[in-house]
Image 1: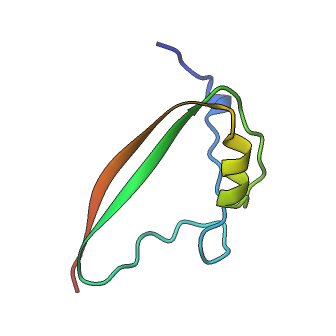
Image 2: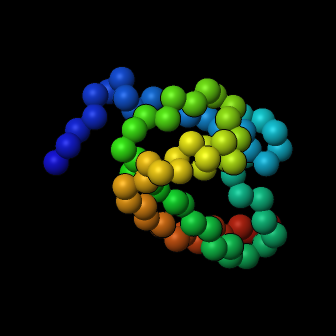
Image 3: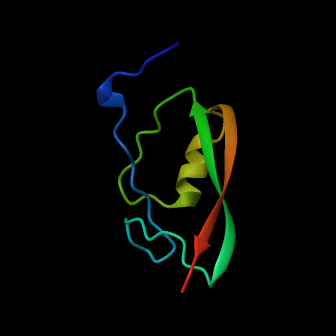
Length: 79
């Protein structure tokens, strides 16, 4: 098992669909909505700035993905 130094575990906040560097969460109608979290193992640190877009992250990850996984989840929203 490999461990990363705490200094390497700094999160990157990307720009959301509303153009802000913040988490807004799912916003769906009443009932269940299937979501998926995608997790990537990379062979390098990307060194991207805060507020980067999804497209910039995907472009920087190109050629550096060692492995990937997807975690499906269901979000239930009641009014």
